[in-house]
Image 1 (cartoon, rainbow over the protein chains, first blue to last red):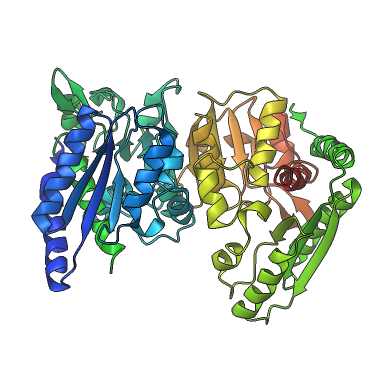
Image 2: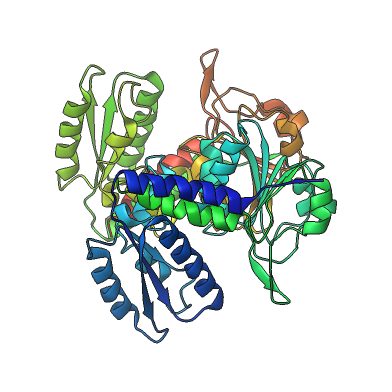
Length: 274
Length: 274
């Protein structure tokens, strides 16, 4: 049976540290979040960021725009927001409604406020190993490996999903850590050929309970970034019941990587501001 | 027995096209190459770039500096070079002698002249899929896949080596093409577990003849970026004799990816200038 990695607890510990630093250094920080449209999951995620900010003494301001706003008008508005001096970190809540050119919008965030690491400038520096922060999801994974003293050199890591927020930045991180790694996606014929050999299995797809216990290695460290709704309940990519029996470590959903990632987002805000 | 992919021939075809375009559009282009120190392989590679440039009517200027030049002085000199209007593309020949901060030097190249795609700005755009060119090595691989009409979706690709010029940018390219891929390095315990299953095997290590026929799949497409000297002869990462017997396709060394990569470098120069 797997050790459950308590993401809430880890998140609380990170936030506690941040709170102390903010107090000690008398920092005045404010997070600005841009929401376009009314996506339900986005609202939940924003609420988590707001709660975490409030808890540790970071200001929070939400900028809401309707889906019907034009790309150019949205750009104008965001340009105004990023210029505001008291806002030290900006999040454009993704996904934007499909009609927008997401890349163009994200590139409006100056690197020193880009706590999600999503502008071309930030990503170039991240790619090159020259950024002081990681994308929050990567920072969250790194946090786990540090806590469990895992050296990735020579470890066999398999990543399920190659998306912009998890899989793609993970490939850069894993190269930098000299891991042996494989990345599978929806076109992979037999993902079990690879997943069965993984010592560390990271998933970021968003298909509820798609990875069952029969395609994982006994004792695997299973890290679940999946986040989707099934029958009104939040589910991860791993099928909890069967994976729990076989894995060595497992991050649950909810209460796993989600809270840690939010805490790491705020850690980025601090790191970029002192 | 493998089909030998004739890199010289492909290179000639690319260069012929470029020459025609330069003539038709009456383009005046000049390539500037910076060499620091006297590395023997670097000199050979530069000579290849010079020959290819001359062949198609691109001007060429070599800027040589001694290893003893200071980082700041080198930066000053490069800043002057990149400003020169007639120089439309810049190559900093790598590796720089160890005492230099390579990243800092590469970041001096403005993206519109960065035909090697090595500055943070260019790499950020490449990562984000917003650059009009690929790094030359990636462009060379892409050229092969196009010629052999290979759709990478769902293909099992294995990359040996995770370096800056081949492995790392390949990970971004392979994500963008939705391939299933694995990346191994010097810390991987049994590379044959992965290499034996690869439909496409790409190596960019620089250890002569390290990959033998017994660790590859019959019919594999073997792409060799390796380039090292053994007994005074240029060798690839694949052991030609044993791999030739088993592979479906094989790029030889010399005369494989090297010439194609040089042609793709000059293709980048054109692409960025009209």
